[in-house]
Amino acid sequence: KKINIAIDGPAGAGKSTVAKKVADRLSFVYIDTGAMYRALTYLALKTNTDIHNEETLNQLLLNAEISLKNEQGEQTIYLNDEEVSDKIRSSEVTNHVSYVAKHRAVREEMLKRQQQLAQNGYTVMDGRDIGTAVLPDAKVKIFLSASVEERARRRHQENVQKGEDSNLDTLIEEIRKRDQIDSERDVAPLVKADDAIEIDTTDRSIEQVTAEILTIVSA
Ligand code: C5P
Image 1 (cartoon, rainbow, N blue to C red):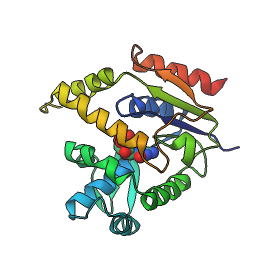
Image 2: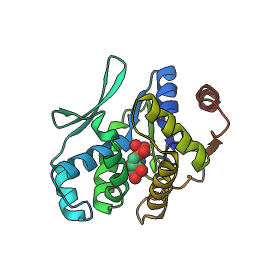
Image 3: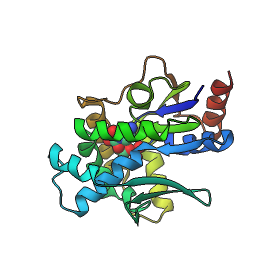
Image 4: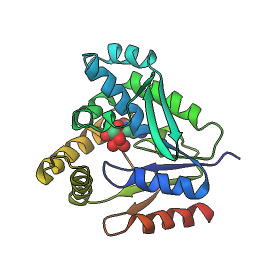
């Protein structure tokens, strides 16, 4: 039986860090679905494509190859032949991606690609709709949560470490906005799957959360 692990939750709940660690420990492949929506958003902004026009955006996606690679233990993202791993983390992309991810046609195409990536099993996939829509049969479903203040604080720390300008109050507002759009959209909104196990990461370390998930996986 093909084993996949779904990790969902709002922005900054620690999904990617924890999913990467869980994948490493199990020798599974880590798949960052948010990076795929980010890559499309980056491409739309770069080509001046209207992100509110479902049809043109979907055409753009259908002609774009987005690949997730693992190079020397580092997760890298390619858009066609362009390496975009860092570019897709810009605040401009971050603040537009939820509008791109609202469109039904875009989500259908992304879902197809994501299911293909998981078809052989042994993946840890993180996102917003993995347990509910992409991998409804995942062996383990985790929903990570944390208070919005805590999530913004984590992003703030990351930004400061990278030497970037960062304002905590602005981050709180941006994360609230993104959560709201992600939770209120018509197609595959951000919601905990009924059979997902929720872990509140507010007062837990990355190591603790990782260990908890590994215990659930081996149960
Ligand atoms: O996980 P990350 O913060 O990089 O995701 C960026 C955005 O991509 C999310 O805010 C959401 O709008 C969208 N997304 C999604 N479904 C997924 C993964 C990400 O709608 N499975």
